[in-house]
Length: 347
Image (tube, rainbow, N blue to C red; front, side, top):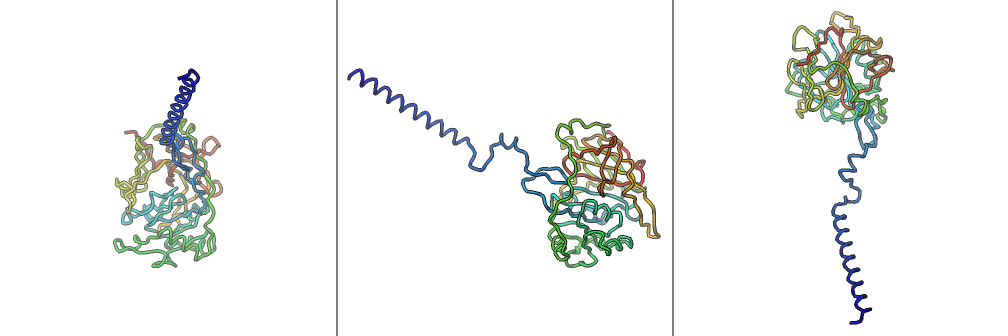
């Protein structure tokens, strides 16, 4: 074999070996690469969601352009446990008649199949719902609330007109603790009344991860609110350090969803002091939701005294003249006659 022929054969052999190695490496890379349209784990961690929900600050890939819905929910002991509370973005809790509180649950990021028991309207709850430009849902009304609803103060649907159609009665509880409505039926009611549901509420301000790390205050893992001399109507919150959220209790029973057994988990607790006045023989109240005043905020197991302001209908926490940013997640706002009804413990 000539020298030139030997060199040529060696070159061909090296070329063949190189091609084989290249094909083998390509196979390995192909096996490790994600499918078309998929995102690898490392890449996914770096991606930020396209949109955020306006009332929770949590991420979503779909633009949240649906209107918020504000539902009056019963909190009488015979109405517990309720349905849908764990899916509400914001919940207001305030006294109705006597020592019983009532909830205004505002939904936008989640759409429960079952909400209730639905209870009757009060004028101050209507004001709060209007502040978030919500569709207001109730079953019944006080005289003051009736006038506001009849005069078109807020878009609404009411069980007084739709009992047994949009609103359904359950057989396991007695009236008025057994009226429920679904999210789909709320939309049907909006369509019947030609109510526009295709716009999102004004977005709240939420803290960044860096701002969350700078939170300060006094440590607490238990908050108690005395609405009554009886424990049946009082509220307790416990901070769970593992999940970094507050759990809620009424009469020492944890607040959960009746249907899913999901607990109510809270990222921001705001307790606001508002003026309360009894206005009739039934014990109905007038609550001043516009004046501003003293408040507490609880975030990440710490609390501090702040102020609250009514900003275009929304109840916003303030400190040193600036609005306080909320943690992304769910917010519960307790309205009390006096901050002296609130106690903090660190067990």
